[in-house]
Image (cartoon, rainbow, N blue to C red):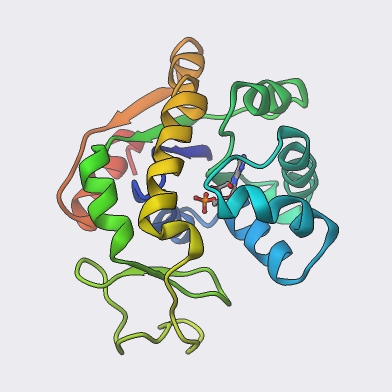
Length: 210
Ligand code: AMP
């Protein structure tokens, strides 16, 4: 199964990708997580990406295309993969097509901007393993501590209110046009808004027939 999780920042792509990844036995590839790790390790990609990320802007296409091409070559992607947060521009989608990367389904998780803002302000992330939580909707077992690796959870720099608004604007302007791109290829499937994580997972399972 080769999937793209599509939607605004904070729509729940990462959360649903993690659930699906376990169910389907295929890896999730999150360019956001790859970039955050590059920033933390101060690699050349990280140094290029940081200022864009902090401002809620997109990292240049050529950086992303390089990252994703390399990752999809790895052995664990042979059986399938779930892309989370990529492609985010028409140029990225075209580059993937040109490289022969095909998808079975693009899951478009629809959430209003108002709901996104509410969610992102309560989001907490693990700076070490990338797991995400929400103070109300999906709290960790112990407050402020990652269930997976025990590290202290933080509010991501780009989840701060002013950056969230910039990220939403970037989404509508640069990423949303991809809906039409994949619609025209017959693989876009809309996941209507659901009030809980579980209901969203169920809606996705119904679409995929799993
Ligand atoms: P995310 O965790 O997916 O919301 O990504 C966090 C930030 O990383 C974004 O706001 C962008 O600055 C950058 N980023 C992640 N994926 C991409 C992508 N496919 N294209 C451009 N920038 C990206």
